[in-house]
Image 1 (cartoon, rainbow, N blue to C red):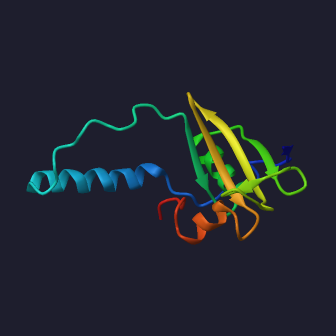
Image 2 (tube, one colour; image 1 turned 60 degrees about the vertical axis):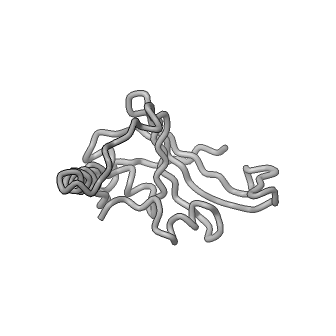
Length: 136
């Protein structure tokens, strides 16, 4: 694992906060519950979060946004590629994948920002399919 040098404060990104999407989801669930069309909430399946991973298009801009707008950081930055990943497999098959990863702790939760550097990794696939996208 190679640690890459980067300054997350050099420019600002355009990432909207996750709470905006959460507000919409909560409002929708509350409206449905008031109409009687949503079942009563059940006990949560998960009661503790240890890690959050977010796939991003531009790691540096996203880090800067989180530092500047939310005070989240500092970030440890790593690059994974065929040169430093030995014997890497997906679904039991050897593959050559590349991505950059930034990690930081927010309280007891580890946050990871992941930028795919290839077109075939699971991270690149998630970007193409729209998963991992910050709310717009």
